Structure formats: C-alpha cells, structure tokens
Length: 231
Image (tube, rainbow, N blue to C red; front, side, top):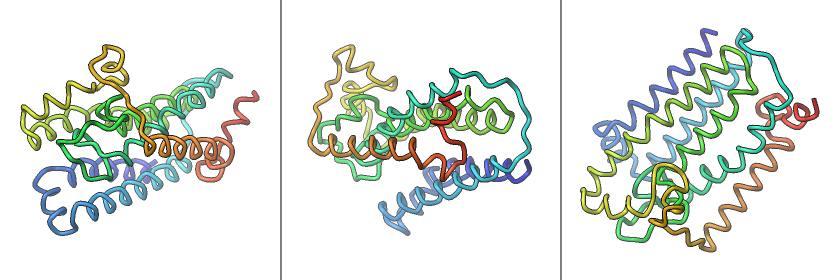
C-alpha cells in the first residue's frame, strides 16, 4: 500500500509541478515544445505504469461485491475513451492538451469541436467506467483520484488558454466547442467536419481498443475483460 500511495503521489506531483507556467516555460526553453511534450508524456506513462503495478500488488480491501453487469460499463465506455485520447493527442488543439502544434487562427479540429478537452475526457471516462467493476479500496483511490484530477484540470487549462490566446480569440474559439462532450454540436454552436486525418486517427483508436480488449488488458494489466463478461 505504501508503494502504491507513493506512486500515486508522484503521479499527481508530476501533473501539478511541470505544467505550472514558470516551470513549463523553463522546460520548453530547455527542451523545445516537442521535447517537453514527449518527455512529459513519457514520464506520465512510466508513472502510470508504476501505479498500475503497485495497485496490483497492494493488499485487497473489499468495499462492494462483484455483479455481472459491472464489466459491461468499461467495455461499452472505453471505445469513446480511446477515441478521445488518441485523436485528442494527435489533432492540434489550441484550447487544451495536444501533441501537435496548434495554429490559433485555423478552424477547430473535429475532435475539438466535440469537446475542448478530449484527452481529459478520455481519462475521465476510463477512470469512472472502471470504478464499478473494481470494488476495493485501492481501485477507489486510483480511479477516483484520476477522475478528480481530470475534472480539476479542465478549468485550469481554460484559464491557461485564455491567458495565452487573449480573451477575444479564446471566446471566438470556445464558441465552437464546449466542455461537456457533444453539447456544442447538439446546440448547433459547433460542427464536426470529419477530415481524412481524423478518420485515420479514429481507426487507430478503434484498433487499439480492440487489441486491448482481446489481448492487451490481460497482458499489461492482468484481468481479462472478456472472461469477466462471461460470468
């Protein structure tokens, strides 16, 4: 349990200290924007992997019993989570997290018209959908903490984008999207124009989900989602 809490603390610290404007600006000046993003992403993945391993080895403290309907939730929700994370990282996004340099004057990418924080929503859906099927204390801390971190980061990134873009440009871009997924599309304030690149990234996200469902989750995490569905 001590190792799990330490790994979680370091993960949370890594998502508070490096993104802070003074630290972030110094790291970008030292590494370049792409180097900073790649290094930060690699650090996040390493710490997330450590958390998963430590959580698997931590003592089990049950909080609620397993029910056959619980595994259905992540199986149904995770395609959307994969789509948000993969496409959100691959497409430029001047309003939130992205691995691509953004042009604030360019039209919003289709995934950004869906929600201005697609990567955060992907992690939020991942965390929230895994809570019901993991009825133990460590999982509650892990997935509950990740969901809270994703939610808390959204207003922080909004403030950062406003400061970077200026109020007028931020307002112009924000009108074409929304924090809540698909709200701008439903209210007709934003439009999703699927490009060939977006379709390609969507196919990659779907392929990653299928692989993770059939094999990846069992190899990397432990439990087999399909075997849980057969209960």
